[in-house]
Amino acid sequence: MNWKTFFALLSRDAHVARRNAIQLFLQTFLQPLLFVFIFGKVMVGSGYMPPSYKSLLLPGIISISMTFTGIWAVAMPLIAEFQWTREIEDRLLAPINMEWIAIEKVIAGMLQALVSGLVVIPLAWLVLRPGVDISIHTPWTFAAVIVLVAAFSACGGLALGCSIDQQHIGLMFSLVMTPMIFFGCTYYPWSALDKFPILQKAVLVNPLVYASEGMRGTLAPQFAHLPIAVVLGALIFFDLLLLVVGLRRFEKKAVS
Image (tube, rainbow, N blue to C red; front, side, top):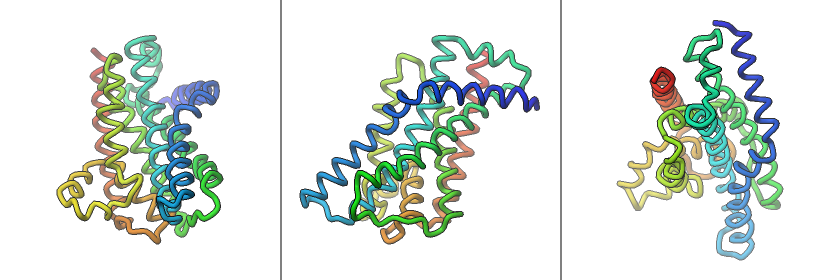
């Protein structure tokens, strides 16, 4: 393993992310903050939602922001490098094993997703205040959840970026991202689906469910949520599954 080359690739991706910081901010923060403002400020302020909904909503918004950021940060550059710019060919010539190039992409995406999650917390809190009742009751559990959520988003971006052609980018968001968000327990807890038992069980195949419930369980445990042990186990499973699928797709794409 050539660590110098690995960190050089990571440093390059960090430089690109810093250079596109404003564009990245608008792409990943604008939509979640608009949801925060409309549902948390307007709907609550108008009396259509109870004041406690602010605290219920914020963990889901953090999960959406992290998921969107990680997937976008990994998938879109891969689609461009494999199909438009062909920059991936230069990376494949680097003195490093092929799978480590993909892992470097995942780590870069994880870091961006972590920054997104940690930034959206104070931003959303400023929009929603006063009346937001969230706190980190168990710091180590919160750290584990947020790292696993970042890994899920980046590994998902690797799998999608190596599986979707450039002409199908729109379908990725309409057929993958949109259903994932609306059925990911981001705007409501998983227990709210009690009256729809089939749907309640079906959404458990959506990893965003565990991201939202994990955030809710560590930031706002006063609301119903899945057991943290179940959340951690499911996130680890999806992280490994998406990483394996992504690495296989990357290798297949790189040698074709």
